[in-house]
Length: 554
Image 1 (cartoon, rainbow, N blue to C red):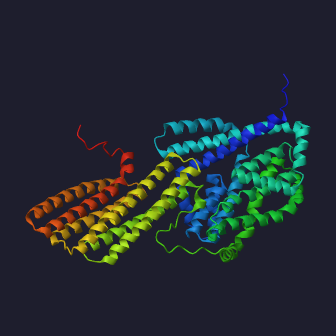
Image 2 (spheres, helix red, strand yellow; image 1 turned 60 degrees about the vertical axis):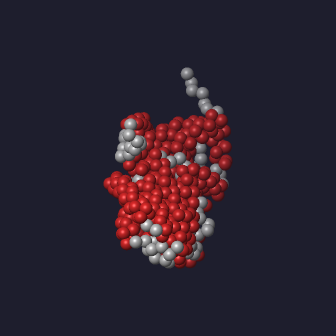
Image 3 (tube, rainbow, N blue to C red; image 1 turned 45 degrees about the horizontal axis):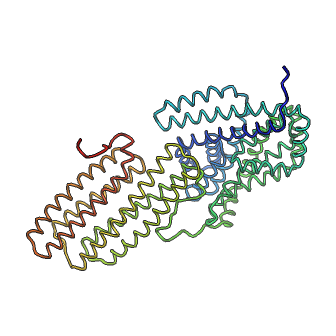
């Protein structure tokens, strides 16, 4: 039975679904890689970039793994904005990222679509059977690669009949007759798809069946390269022009390369025909050659380009107010690993503020320094602003895109850590500072025995704040357990001190009663601080089954 040709509507609907499947596959691979290896990739980009060739190699390798130069751009932009990477090496990283994208296209152009079933099956089994988050991410990567290969196979089957349909072929050839329009269409599609890989593979497939001419296909490759560089610059932080240096530099290298390469397209087509290359092979090879030549041409010019961009895009003045966030880069929202690292750094700034407030608190419990009391009270406002910024930013990361289990848990850890630090600030500002002011007003001096107990509690809380920070950073189970043990120790200290104060109150005069009541209130608040520090470790202990559901005896 003769196979009926597909209608134009059928072809367009099929192409839409297959392109969506291709995008989904690439995105699944990227999410799996970022979920399992995001912090490692960020660290790889942040170190060892002293030589330009090292920077190019780092960008190439990271992008080949992520399958997205856009994701690499967001990651490197954040590092450059924080001063972790100098601008010139960061620009070199992006040159390597562009080559990495072209290499991915080169690999996917080989006919290995028969592997899709094996990869999807292996990924499904790995995801369902693995008990670790990294194992599930690896399964997700396998499924993503399988979906990508499947989509390419379906895409090839859909575009093949186009060559036999004169109406559709003539329509596509007419639409792609204008080189400038080709560049704009490819750039727009790539910007919307966040992937030059998808655009280049689609163009190569259409060129392979003669649906678009070779000159149009090469122009679209140039447009795809430009479009993939637009997202970081369009989504950059306009309040700080320094964050736009790297995205703008990346666009400049691609734009200059496009302007130079555009008039040479007829010559390039002639060379491809002379070499006997098929249209599909020629498009993929052109993509790789273009990015490689641009990288080699701009590599010696990067220091001067970096200096020019630095002059033209000056950094915004750093906020002098301690309550202003420093690390919450909005341009990193599309890279969860980077964004959550930024939120963690800001949460650690909250811990620094709490540490300063705690040290000042123990000082004003011994002295009559009213200025210190006012200073600590004002610091709670800084802590509140940081808490609000961290909470909004961490929550927005989850709203920006679907997070995997690991990133979702990290968002929860950041929010819990931040809210408990904010509660500690409230205890200090609203209660302990009020008690300190009252002690100063009543001219009460704590006896030596009470000051000795306060010294012991200070050492305990100082140690436990560091344990909470260590647990937050590295999910260290031992630090979490030590902190819970210290909570029990704090409870015993508070009970012992309370018993002694009750004895003194029963035996003493009016001043002893007032002093004793103050001491009891102070110890109660210090115990509340200890409880908030311990609460930051519960997620780690719950993950390893280290917490009981209740202290009540059954």
